[in-house]
Amino acid sequence: MFAVVRTGGKQYRVAAGDKIAVEKLAGEAGDTVTLGDVLLAGEGDKMADAGKVSVSAEIIAQAKGEKVVVFKKRRRHNYRRKNGHRQQLTLLRITAVGDSKAAPKKEAAKPAPKQDEAKAAPAKEEAKAAPKKAPAKKADADKPVAKKAAPKKEGATEAAPAKKAPAKKAAAKKTDAKK
Image (cartoon, rainbow, N blue to C red; front, top):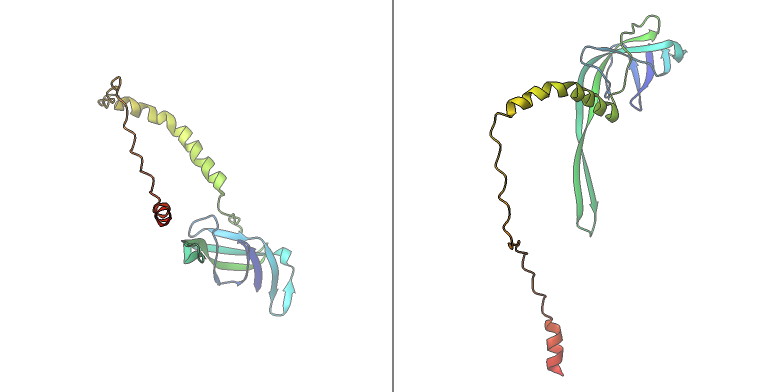
């Protein structure tokens, strides 16, 4: 039996035993995920009801794709920018394609955490860790304090950098000499 599933904005035709590389999914190697967005399913020439079919897969590894070089250039403007990118991928082995009753559901496929959620989690951890850091500062109080800079004397001023003399206009002198 085969199915067409959508994950990471792309569509994949899969069957049991296939290995595919998809956009990054949450999970570690060995975890089982269920790809729920089944668009089409069938066996041979016969089509099945896609709503009743589920696809389960095992995560083989989290990896990066090949490097893509991004080069921008605007001719005659001395503008060149070179950048590279490696896409985060998840390697999957399809374990079962079939009825949702027959396929085991251990864990639902979740997209990677968004930027906002990723920033919020460390902030909570830092709030918990703050009381633990307070005793460490008391130990730092035994260390000698660095000396402060000496106060400036009265009347002393900082020297301003010298200004460059304006360029002379040689063209004006030549025209005056000809007259």
